[in-house]
Amino acid sequence: MLTEADILLALRDCYDPQLPCNIVDLGLVRSITITPDHEAPGTGIPGVPQKHLVHIEITPTQTSEESAAQLSAQIANRLAGIETVSRTTTTLLHEPTWTPLSITPAGRRTLGLDGNPNLVQIR
Image (cartoon, rainbow, N blue to C red):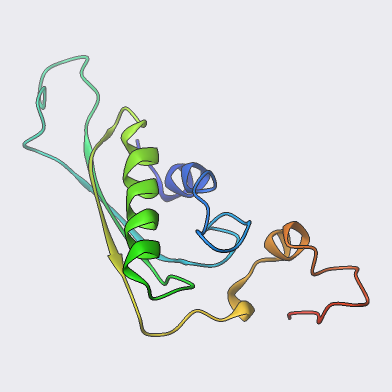
């Protein structure tokens, strides 16, 4: 069974176009919806795994169309590699806006924001 944890793990391979950190640790992922795809080829055939439709809502760090297109393409391409995902859609949310307060502790470490006295700590 496909879970939100499976999707989040895969999304750790998708990076923000501007910041050298994955979209999960930057806190861009707002919601993940997974629903069975009852119209996928092979549905109901014994031995064929259930396919799912995945919808992801993210808040981008940038509002440019180029960044939005790059994020959406990365997400779709990465999740296409999961056997039980039949289709992925991405919605870019502009409210609430992304702030550095959304970055996880792992993301702060990746960006070098923890333990460096010359940088502002984000909490």
